[in-house]
Length: 550
Figure 1 (tube, rainbow, N blue to C red):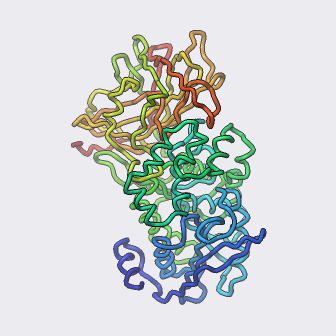
Figure 2: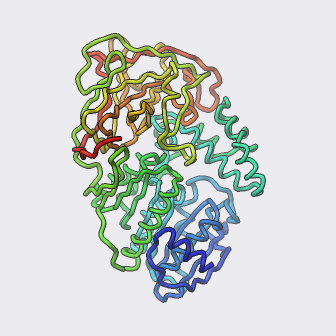
Figure 3: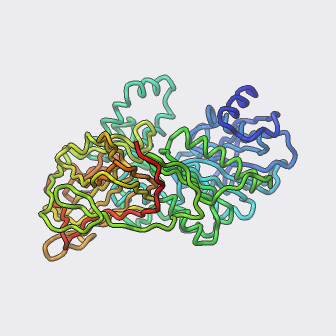
């Protein structure tokens, strides 16, 4: 195993190991307050006084996680990897977010009783492994000296119901992934080889209350609960989000995310709240999706430096508080003192005949499309759970559909660099009271390929956005934040449509409950772009370099 870790460390360009002698103890029973036993592995370095790194996970303790434990332990840390309740040998039933606070605190109490405990620990992990960090962080006290939170957030409710819709692809795919952990390995590989046909069918199935059984063969309790408890302010979520105590977290936090990650807006909100509380977290946002290999490599490197500095007190190379990767031709990494950086917010207005320009619109009639939930506008790339389908893709196939409007600039004479939060304001009139508004910003290259940069969706229902005297709604749409350089010769394009299925659950157009809706009602909507209704996308612009485009 020592040879494996040496090869892995060299390939990943990790800091030099401090020891090669690691004692591994597996399947330790850690008993928590309600009597449940949580199975735990301990990687102990042969180094007196080594601090501890805790990883709590529902994804198992073998394979890549085992290699992670060895790599971190070799660099001078006790590593404790624990399976969340109901997963991989731990007792009880897995109920997302419900037990993580108490189980985390009880695990910390167990750590305090170990003879090698030094009184200091850190936490590391991506996605759900980050949720469990935030569940514990406010109550861990001064013993928690460092957190490395990767593609994760303190609150998951708003990501589940982005724009008050429902993140169907993320939630159902995750439910299927968790259930797949309980089936034999060969059966799982066969399902993947076949292209996961059950999951594909489930993503198009109605009513949604049956979709989990279609995908997995069983009813998934949390999927059913999330369909029922989607109303803003629902009591259900109060005990399942941890952002209300983020200002009590004293541990230094390193954040790593990607521009096409499903939790990016929520993670940047965590960063903003920590800064408002006087903390100095670091933030790295790269050209990654939720499962990009590059994301995991970068988070391990940065995590090891973070633990070396804040847990072990060892000097590390200085870095900027914020590092972001600028996408597009001529982009690259940039260091910033904070997020978001100073920028000039410019309105780019939708124009007649499909134009997009900073100049105000001069008139012209509205553009009309018909959205049919029986043939929903498909999602293409973007922030998805599965890395192979996520990220920037060529959008021309979806832009050719009659239910998608596009607004495009002339070829740029100078580079345009967008860096920061992106918003849109869409003025529309609809024959239906229930509808969705999906907006996507794209970079059209010299060959005419349209690459998605960022997007967002908002669900509209009666009373949410008051109509004016002519029945026109002004719908604000928060897109994912962006860092992108539009090169000379390229064009900016804005898509406006009625959905992005199955990334977001289709809007049936009837107002029926999320889980039980089966009636699908198509309807026309008009997008206005005149002086009285100046639909636009608001872009935060920063001075761009003059690197020539291709």
